Image (cartoon, rainbow, N blue to C red; front, side, top):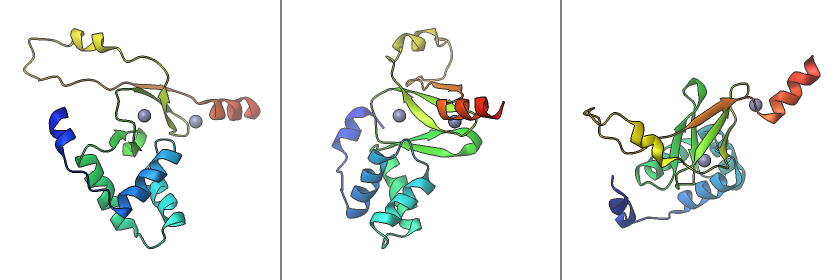
Length: 139
Ligand SMILES: [Zn+2]
Ligand SMILES: [Zn+2]
């Protein structure tokens, strides 16, 4: 979908979407399980299947982003502007990195390839501060 097409998509802000997007804002790149937990607390009438289906639609409509973390776990992100992420290899925590995106990376992509480039994602891997503290305590 092009950027323009996205802007013209009629956004139906249903009650479910509102609840889910509120949860997305308070959680840090949550998984679908974490969203479901959050939704259950505020709106126990919305069942898990509805949350799952609604989130898939929101991804299709370009309202939220889906990021593949470790072990095939998807994280969801309401920040649509290009930005980079960091992933903790111990606990799977996914977070934004406060740094500029580097559009010049795209320039290194082979121009003779028949793959049509639309952009790039970067995930930095490492160990988060929480897990580092745990490691120090263990030793
Ligand atoms: Zn961690
Ligand atoms: Zn993000």
